[in-house]
Amino acid sequence: MKYSKLFPKTLRQAPVGAESINHQLLVRAGFIHQEMAGVYTYLPLGWKVLNKISNIVREEMDKIGGQEILMPVLHPGENWKKTGRFSSFDTLYKLKGAKDKDLVLGPTHEEIIYPLLAENINSYKDLPLYLYQIQTKFRDEPRAKAGLLRTREFMMKDLYAFHESDEERNEYYKIVREAYLKIFKKLGLSVLVTKASGGTFSDLSEEFQVITPSGEDTVLVCNRCSVAINKEIAEDKKCPQCNGNLKEERSIEVGNIFPLKRSYAEVFNLYFTDKGGEKKIVSAGCFGLGISRTMGAIAEVFHDDKGIIWPETVAPFQVHLVGLDLEEESVKGEAERIYKLLQAERVEVLFDDRVEVSAGAKFADADLIGISYRVVISKKTGDQLEVKKRVEKETKFVTFEQFLEIVKNPR
Image (cartoon, rainbow, N blue to C red; front, side):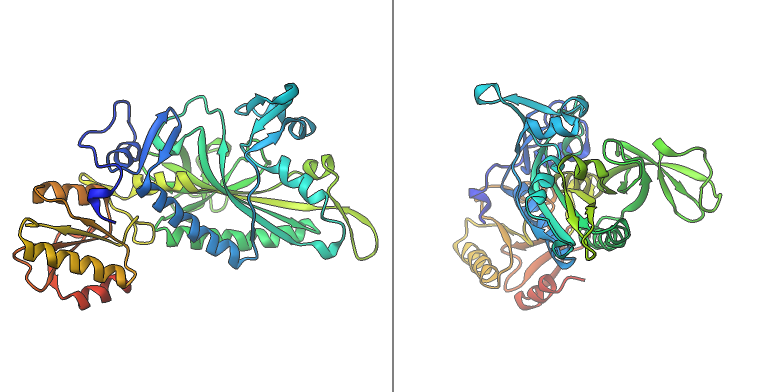
């Protein structure tokens, strides 16, 4: 991609009202555009990051037997009335359709997936079943703020797992828990698995929290055994596991896993016949992961005073190629050659091909956008490349072949 064609360009100043770091940097760097409080357009750079996060999640969900589906955003209000959540779910968006029919913009999908399975699950032979989606959700958040951390429209992965028994469900719970840890490790995020109250969903759940001073959650972390507990359910300042002292930390919740209530299966008649011919209720678990919130969390954690520092696994491009002195044909030709060679090697590259833009402005844009490797071609580089990692201060000169080895085999 050539920067001269990239939409949009960077901004020097953060937008008015942008208080959180992720909001400021993601808007300034051209990843998102705010349409109103809690609602954003994901611009080309932002969409690339979201897709990379999503693909890492898909890879791990597929490994544990997940089958991807896509359920609707628009739900029949009747399903929500059956569960009682049409009136009790306090952030529900409600609409009126043709013939005054009640409709809902989905904040979660139990009211869709349970009726779907009730039509298709009959026997123990149909279980277990693991279905997941990456879908846009809507919640009428009264205090939409903090950029992508608290929004009214957001992207989320939810995995629904259905089993013959609670015991089987609990075993799969452990498998998904490990898959989540692998996902966040690939994303470059250090997470605390935190015991938490389930709120709307269940009496007990676990959250995946990222510790950062700008987080909106508060967790209590044991200084002895590192057990983490959401502050909402902590009875005192002592660890329930080892009696160590608990320290308050600010954090961002990026995932939540929990068993689903039996009432959903009862309402939608989700039963199966076991091996002995007895009718039994299906046991289920739900495993959520905030795709767009994770993007915001990464920006909150990985940045400096110059801009974002994306982990290599989710950066919108692998290489930010910066051409200087492009008014000279020989330099311009060399920069174009390297650009095409990188593309031929299937290296994702953003090429700053702008002429009559200062080196300082180009370097500032590269730092703000935060791609892992900056490669400079200028009059002084000759037949080498001037390479700098976004996380490092020093530059070095290497051949194209040496750089290709670096970028294709990151440490």
